[in-house]
Length: 618
Image 1: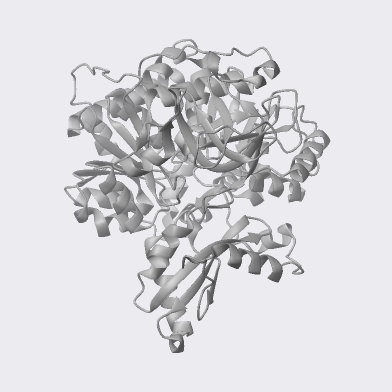
Image 2 (image 1 turned 180 degrees about the vertical axis):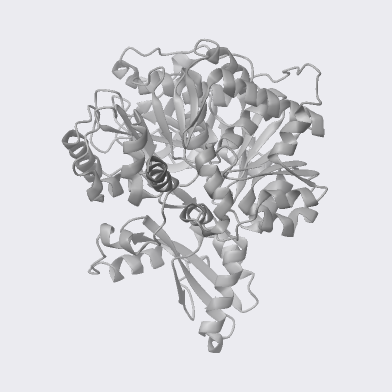
């Protein structure tokens, strides 16, 4: 069937295979199999706490037995509300080992968002980072959760860091930095043991020692392995169902197509595990080829030079704003980075100007590589198109991975347009999702069977393909704002604002920002214009902040007496976008480095480690 699909890009493959053989087993089984070839390699590094693949597999087995001991069954949903910590990735693979489905939740999600994710997935088992406990306590009775395991951020830290962290609790700079992940107050995980529905991670692992039966791995390639949350093509939150085949194919394709990943490479896992980019590229792919995932639960661009100096990573995966910030950070000025052999940009468009600037920056710092851009969606396990190893076309997002096929069609149809003509990007291949959880309508709109018999993912993104198969991203037909790599969905914000008793209607658009690229702005029409007061605005903000993750809060609000409409009566958000563009045309934005100085100063755990080491040396 694949022979009927045009694939002109293959002539640009540099020694990679056109087709791969994908195993018909679980994501855990793939890691177990490949790990047997390099059991002594370091699997992950968490602030200096390093575990070999042999030790990592043992940790997964302990957590898998603990899950069985508390009653988790095959195809149960285990929600994992964690940043990048060892317990987060151990839980993911442990659930997969016993045939349970891992639902990955953003810890910064608001309490009502978490409730929605727990309910839509019918979660009975929850593993959550300690600072989310206060939020979850407010909504857990409205869910089917039977047991919640709470994990401290310091659970797997080396003794030196952990002892200071525990002793000083909320007064240390480290704790303040970790608290910055969430506006909610720090909650110590030991509190959880007072509630019968809760247990600490240590108690959970102890439970596993009681389970002595063999664990039968019943998972196959077609079985659902994970649920990740995305706004899809319409911008309303949906659970994306990904199979074991999806995850395994994505890991194998990434390794094959990137072309410069090597056994024992150290990869900075900045992208979070609840994001497809982070889970697949920074974890599953790295564990597949025998590399080391350097786990960072929180990230600060201002101190990124210290991270690079301490870990000397071979691979950095990030969003364009990260690379922009690196060029502005003067602490990098005298650093040489010959160890940095691969730089991957995703999550948002990389401008031609930034690529040129960053490539020059890499050369100045003695790195032998250039920055390479990828494209993908959660619905196809993140990246499925990437710049070739030794060839670049300005403005292009690269060429499709092995076994992945792209074409450009007239929007909403399956009619392919000629090379060089703009249309909707559609994708097919083994990483395409199974569908949206409990949303057949959206699934049918997004996954469509074409005349060639294949299921194609209609991305809602606009693009062009040239005659050689290079793809050029041109924009999003869906209403989505990308801010520092995070997806923000205007419809979701509008629904919350419109639920306020004083609000008649609202419209949210993206506006330019010098560092985050785009941020949200809300236009609000009240039922009574006389209520356009600071008190009303604060009440609306309070509602938004209670129901939405912090990164999606509008950066600006503006009261209007009315909003522009289309001929059929819908809000003409494009008119508002145009108005903002004209308004900001001559505005002189602050320089990015000046803006960074205004960001709340946060000391990283690396800084604390440096200080502690100096004290120890004394």
